[in-house]
Amino acid sequence: QVQLVESGGDLVQAGDSLTISCAASGRNYDIHFLGWFRQSPGKEREFVARIGWGNTYIAYGDSVKGRFTVSRDSAQKTMFLQMNALKPEDTAIYYCAAGPAIGQFDYWGRGTQVTVSS
Image (cartoon, rainbow, N blue to C red; front, side):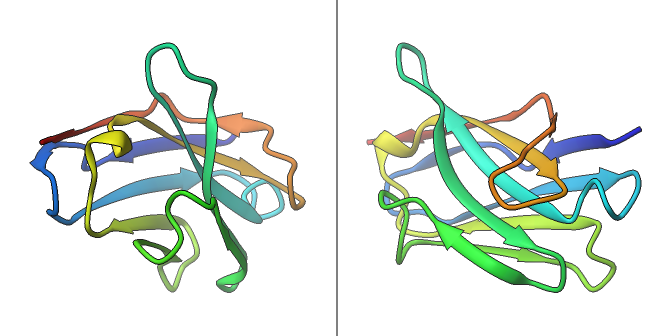
């Protein structure tokens, strides 16, 4: 069974940096790809970033390119999202997701709240 636990969400000011984490457990096959998504009230869920096993197949959503960096630890079981130059529009619940193939996210965490004040 895959479990994904996000942490590190916080209230920050515009321009600040913040790093959130996702601790993944389960079969390596099921967590081969990890991703970050976010959702704010009244908006659809938005793709933020993804990363494959061995820090491969990294990709970002257009709204965060150049500001956010996704990575995994050496054990490949923890994913990080370093967020720089945060904007109020980055305010959302950030969800961690996992799956065995690109674009296939079968497992989801409960989310961590990131709030950016202006």
